[in-house]
Image (cartoon, rainbow, N blue to C red; front, side):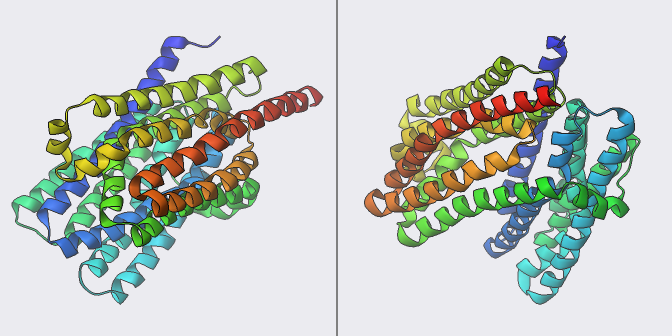
Length: 416
């Protein structure tokens, strides 16, 4: 029997953790932007982009296999597996940190300073994120929220002290941000009474290479197509178009928080129960997950659609005029994209990441092409309608593939 109150409680803690993490990162960017010169903020943006990419890589090779394959494991199996996953994240952090130190010595000015500082704290940043995923896999999202909150509190205190001391260079601010993560990573050791085992990295990568290769390729496909589309749109479209696209991303950022929180909650919960779920339960969970993410995201966007222009201009200034023109298509596109979250999460929980890669290998390039063609035909409105068309075309195939994989998974379970 599923304890519904415990399930709801874990879902709430997942959402709370994602809010703390996202709001803290966004607030840090705002504080740095207001405290340093434009070129210094550019250096910070470079460092933060490198961090964002490597976090995705770390999750693909270290912690997502833990979520998929060990969420339902007994403590005597889970503890060494989580130590190996954490050790893999630490090894990647040490390697990435060394690369950043070399890059920081190569570049001059704020970029070099930011990369050098990032190199010092990179291991702590990746291990802290890995602790969050470990706690999710263990069914302890409250522990992840506590860890992120501790990081946020220390970060606010240290960054605030630097600003009171009139520090306006990017290097110390990056050190304060990452140093706070190091503290949270140490706190994770105390919370779990476990520690990273970097010596287990090679074995972890070898044992899960069938999954990590797929996850890495999928991450590269998703990030490459979307970031590439924005770069091409920036090159061939107007500055107003790319400004409007960035503005609408800011307004609809809450939908990303909902999406990440929903997946962080659902993936380990379903993985630990996959041998007991019926086909009807798989379908029901997929429909429910997609409906919650798409529905709440649509309602959030609808609030801005119904808001008076004065409210939008108060938030985004002159950028609001361009954003208001593409807002409806963006809200619709996000809802269509979210419709595939349910099937994608179910297939990952079944350890069918190859199937999600195959579908993303079609959806992501199609979104790239439709977005670029759209901006050539109709500027920013064409781009967002192009994205929406791509998601509408591919959405049914996620559900068809889920139906096939549920049947196959059931047959394999009966045979075994």
